[in-house]
Length: 143
Image 1 (tube, rainbow, N blue to C red):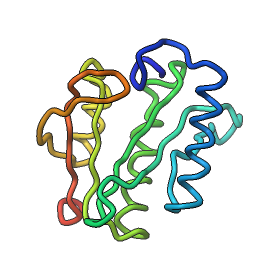
Image 2 (cartoon, one colour):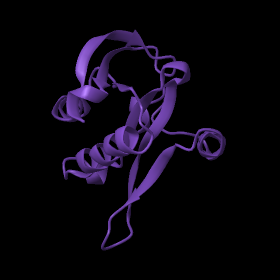
Image 3 (cartoon, rainbow, N blue to C red):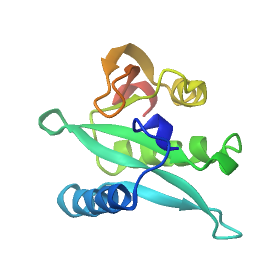
């Protein structure tokens, strides 16, 4: 998972703790975060999916999801992302969602297109330094 979000293959314990603290604070401040995903029958950790504010003054949020390698290709990301999209539009009443992905991550590209996101441009990711495809989903597109 980490190769898509950082310049290293493994996050240090300190980086994991910092990320967790960031998510807890986001939940307190914004009411959203990247929520943990678990298999229903086994309680095995699958990954995370969630939202963060992108342009608060325009009520635009960002969608993101990360799954453990063992759970790729099983539909978890699609299901979780759809639930987050529904929550964003129906409960938070956001005006739009945005998303980006590592340029080599074709699975995420496919999921975003299936969810109705439209590719709008390329943007540099601060964490990885790569130019990433950037997508937008407007409320009227699906809801």
